Length: 140
Image (cartoon, rainbow, N blue to C red; front, side):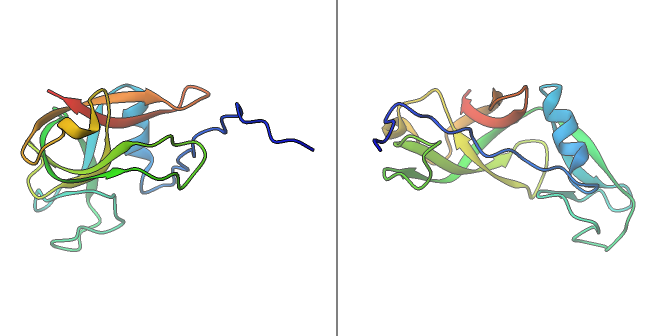
């Protein structure tokens, strides 16, 4: 038996549930929506069943611009999963219009060596197969 070196396994897919569905439904429309408390206004990501500030259950999703800045990042140089070909950048993005939210994501369409702290970025959406879109970021 020989290994097929050209085999590219599919990317892992999200599995939306009742808490995260609003985020993924917005992504399918190429919109970035962040969970927000209807009582105190706190933005939260990852979505939660209760507000992380006031513990309210009055939660919804608010569309945001998808603009932000790189807070921190790492360049992955070794393969940890066969669907991801290194090098690639993982990052924490401070969203401009969702105070307190740092979104964990990938930065794409840029030489990994060119990524910098405080670099302006904007959201883009990648189809990872069967029409599933995931938000990632690219230089603004």
